[in-house]
Length: 80
Image (cartoon, rainbow, N blue to C red; front, top):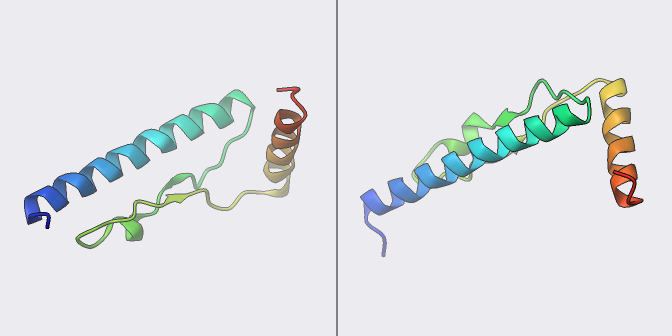
């Protein structure tokens, strides 16, 4: 069984990993001309003794959703 200190360290590691991932996503989307203003770590998912550190992709307008869809389709077709 993990001690409280070990659980806290593991939780902090998950939050850092999520922060890094958010930065990578933001950079990757920016490279495709896509901005997701709500991209962040969901703060409620980091609460408690064992946070899940969920990434919130958030809401976006239709133009952004269309560009994201096209980028994913191009990637699937091997064009990106």
